[in-house]
Image 1 (cartoon, rainbow, N blue to C red):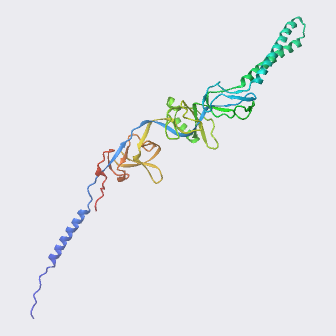
Image 2 (image 1 turned 90 degrees about the vertical axis):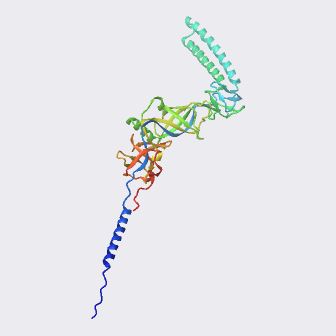
Image 3 (image 1 turned 60 degrees about the vertical axis):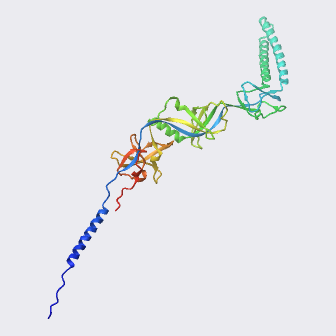
Length: 383
């Protein structure tokens, strides 16, 4: 039987080549998935420094006349003249009305005659009593009649003077409620006119009692300082948003809390030479509350809010890592926040690059405004 020749074995070389190719592919794949060298992000920071800050508080208020005088008649009679122009300034003691004085002039003459008669009788009895020509009782009655007549004359003079109705204070007088020919009487309920003294002028401010308590606690604990005359200074913002040019002073605070509103009334006095403030005008008063000698004012771009509404900020700690802080920000001061808790002097507050960082990440802190434009690119490996 003829023997068939065998083919040479070629699988071994093919398998070897395949193994080499697979190893090369695996090697290339591993090289692509290796992480890129670690890059440190740059963030812009502001180093916080304590500074003195005058703490003020803005409260609503209304202007009120410094003094108010209601002009009423002191005697009965007919108005003969009105001697002022409505809405103008009047001086204290200036005559405003003239009441018909004829009856009171006659009464004055009668009182003068009665006094002369009583005086003559009293003087004659004073001589006769020495010689006992009249009794002691008669003399005393004559003396009493003289004193009574003297009092009657004084009253007649006062009544006559009251026919000239005078301004009790200086100020701006309003409209007249009576005209010539009107009958007025002593003790009537209707006022003839009202005078308001407008320079100076009061501003009554309403402050919640809880804020007053907080202020006292801050002063007692030393968190706030009172400094001289500044403690009593008040500024005003008018209804149109403009600032009143003159500065006022706090006069007093009410001694009791209003039960219906839970607030305390504070009263300030302001110069008002141009009569710009009028009674009843609504204003906002800016009161000096105290001085923080080492206040922390943080830029607003470095402060955000979390889902709970709390103020938060990112700072670079001593290990150059990002640290999350929860703050107590009392109020906005221009483009900054006044921070009571959460930030300390020397803290490096992150204001630039916040969108690329998270707590615990290592960063490079540079002064805000000097961050490289490419520092915000991702440093995650491509895979």
